[in-house]
Image (cartoon, rainbow, N blue to C red; front, side, top):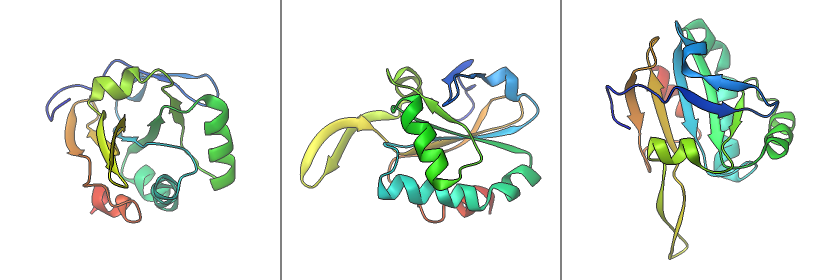
Length: 149
């Protein structure tokens, strides 16, 4: 996906089985953040930073939605443990993540693997992507400031 393109029509089902569609969010700006794995240090820092600034997102007209390849049960535990106020889409087969271009080669501890890339897509009130924070650009402990400031 690139700036100027619309987010996919169907985003997926969240931790409670609710199907999220881009049209359901019409009139709100969207923060769609893709993260590798529930309950890992970087992903927890990112989610908690977004949580801690959630009232600012709401005040500025944003909906915040997280996406990873873990299932609904993992997401429910992650939400409960960290008191997250926003939904997490369980993209277990990677359909949305791959469509967004957030799946690819990762280097960690000297090894190259394939996996989910940490990325964030910001869309306007019509679901059109206005900004993308690509792999290596997301600062997990200050991501809300990256988006809002």
